[in-house]
Image (cartoon, rainbow, N blue to C red; front, side):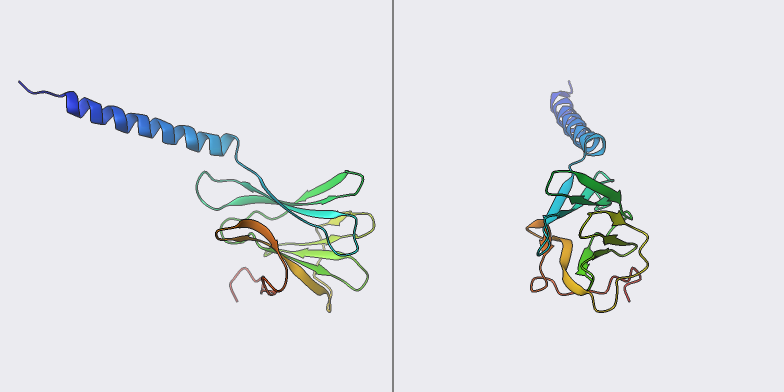
Length: 161
């Protein structure tokens, strides 16, 4: 007589592991964790917040947005271009007139330092703007704002050139 109990036991364990994996993936899709990185520029009462929300269960793809949180708690948030893998970095600059510029691979946002309003149709960062640092993912520490000494200014050309 053939004893099939070990086979059924193994199948049961595989089914339970598969079900657990499906629950995990469903949780990531339905209620993904959102990562926020805040930075307060020098001589500013406003905080800038870069937000990254996963759009894929296991690939590093994110919906990105940029927010200004004013000292009174009010918040202005705008969507940025999606990160479809490897394009999450955003560099921050301060222009001579005090305006801030957030430059990603596919978008540039101008942040009014007085009102905190964000305009995502800015064509370019003004020549001579001071590089303040970057919002980026760092292996072993996660999402952070990196000062220029930690992460020098990089080319933000999506073609890699």
